[in-house]
Length: 131
Image 1: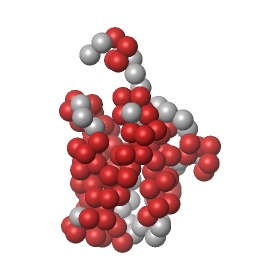
Image 2: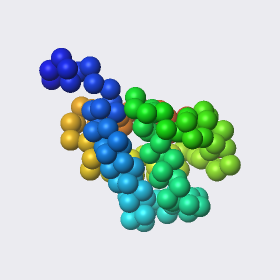
Image 3: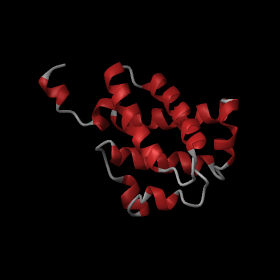
């Protein structure tokens, strides 16, 4: 990896706006097409809105434009997810879809795993139900 590439933000490494869009589309495609995550799919009232909000969140989280903050205020992820029962199973369903999306959209295996581990921490933080 050259010096210029190593200084790139995750947003730049993923391919900027287009890369973040590919990731979010792939995640929601996996959610729609994977029968074992039906419970996760069912809690989404508006998949298009959810996909757009995740795109906006990931844009800023990865070091790009702070779209979510500009449009919706501070993410306050736990508060925004408090209306949904998020247990270990729900976290694992979301991460299964995210694994698929990362595998489909992030070519660099080291960067892909770094993203997966970081997103795992975020997803685990969303749990609001006992084990």
